[in-house]
Image (cartoon, rainbow over the protein chains, first blue to last red):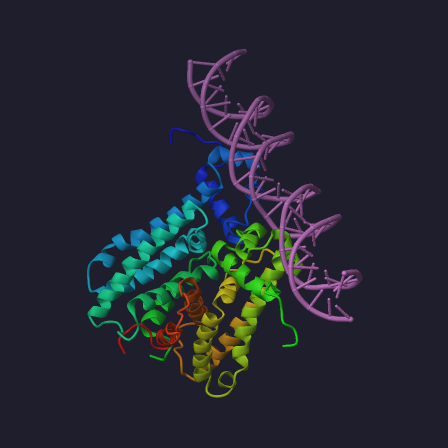
Length: 195
Length: 195
DNA sequence: CCTTGTCCCGACCGATCGTTCGGTTACTCT
DNA sequence: AGAGTAACCGAACGATCGGTCGGGACAAGG
């Protein structure tokens, strides 16, 4: 609180604007001109805050990845029966995904054209493997079905969870979040069939 | 068979090359230079076969959409109990998605920057609504759980199915296809829990 | 007052974008 | 052989790309 800042951009506030535009137009489809219009400052001014377009992407996907990996450090993800730890991770993934929606959205659309994008893809794979091991342990306990391969099931469950970014739009009262995470947990573990 | 064609490009063969590159680099991330390198002809020669970059996109997503809509016209999708028709549509969606993998992949990544992309998004929404009505009818019959909203369940199921394009790679023997469609049907209707 | 540093700007850079054009090659048909 | 044409090419178009540069406006500290 030593400095009384001017009412201006910081790398963080600029990032939130940039991520929104990236998600609307796609990273490749977004020019620095688009960003400057959306931020209300000139194109060259953006370079006062960040080193360039790719740094904005790196900051965004880092934030998303940090949020996801933090789940694995939570107590309920580390101790207990694997099937219960898996349920906790699934539920928390939905919550993080919704809480950091624009950043995770951008992360999930990265294709691998640049070094930054390939680094993001690698960290995503790491996370996937960690969850796959959890599912494998739950299968070894006989708590989840054994007639679907672990790797395949992991991918399909991730697919369902990650697809949330394609349609979820924030609810000002934050009401829909619990409904979504509950629906995902029910469908993943019990399926559509009448229980 | 009246014409013995020269060994050269047609709009269709050129399309298959273009779609592959689009999926690797993203549509916006792909330049006509990239396409010419991949196709082995000069940039200007591409314009002898198609009107431009956007026509390639339009042809690709049209092929994907035609494949999906054709499912709804099949007999098992039109007659019978809604829950059985739903299972058939789910299974066939996986098959079409795998059979037309690169085209459906491109369709699912369209963002809406151009008129062609917005048209594709609109047709996708139409298809989604058709399937949502099927699930609604199955819920009215009491054949699928009623504690998850129909619209929400539809989106999550579509998310799981559509995510296949993110990791499935064609098996020369076509072996994995049945395993995937079976796994999807099991997870969607019965869930992960040991049955 | 003047200096210092933050924040921002218009003008401009070389490179690349999707597309066009005039012309050449190579095959088909008569 | 000669005409016609589908397939192709190199060069260049105006526009836009991500990024650079020198300098102006403005607040804080002396």
